[in-house]
Image 1 (cartoon, rainbow, N blue to C red):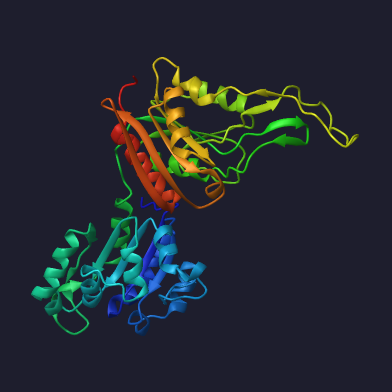
Image 2: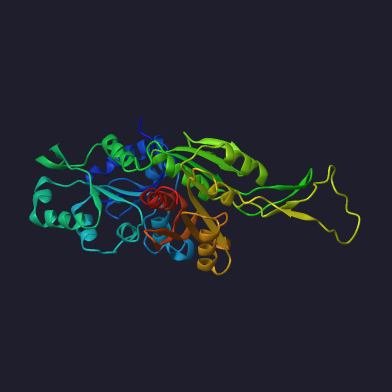
Length: 399
């Protein structure tokens, strides 16, 4: 069964009679669970209206490169960061030429140039245009740009010709889109992930906590599941829905999270949760009344969940996150060594909590040397897949 649950897809539509099929493709992508945003060229609008695609997708259709309504008027960058996949269907000969030669003459080509995730095109044109050596040369250039070319099919064409050039049917294109997210890099591996904040009770109605939304941890759980892993997600209180086929364990406090982690199997342990460092020594049994101008709250240090798991025998492959407000590299590297971790991701805390996008730097040690990888800002769903790919490529027997 086709599943594109939680996937973000930009459906690009260029000028051609096959644009009428794009409405059905949009419907199928959404039926499979994708969030679809449509980008149309000026030529596409001569064949199918933006209003039709807006009604189908439930989102505003994007048509202009310089859009004053976009955040900071940089709509192409926003869209490129948002997308897990850009699918251009139909892709005209003119669009393929512009894409192959790196042009950014309209919104769609600009988004394609600024993308981080995969790009796929579904060519649709007259058979003579498809077979023209110039078109074939342009397609050859796309091979070096990691662009997936789906189709075209053979058959009757609107102009009366018969031959190659028909756009693939929407069902086939939707299935191809689904196949891009299938990965077996963690097949059979059990992964435990912590996510969200913890809450440390002060009294029955108050607690100590932080601004963590849980989005990064939940995105990593989804990415690990897509990579074939059996995933246990141990989550503090958040307002997110757990990914399908992921075992969710809900907790409140740091101690509850540690207890759950100690019971969870796992060859890989990824600690994303923003765990409170301290908790009140003795939470009040009743609501504390306002009695004086100041109040002293005695705190005791919480257990270090990640360090505790990293001391287990056998030790799982342990991955940590360092959300800092200063000295990111030095603090992250210190945690990597002090906590006996295999890998750590450092990010700027104030620009990440609650946001849909993030940028991180990875540090790890392999073959006796220190390694580093920088991940530029991207939506957390896409970033999570890149981080899971890095983890699966570097995991090794515990040292």
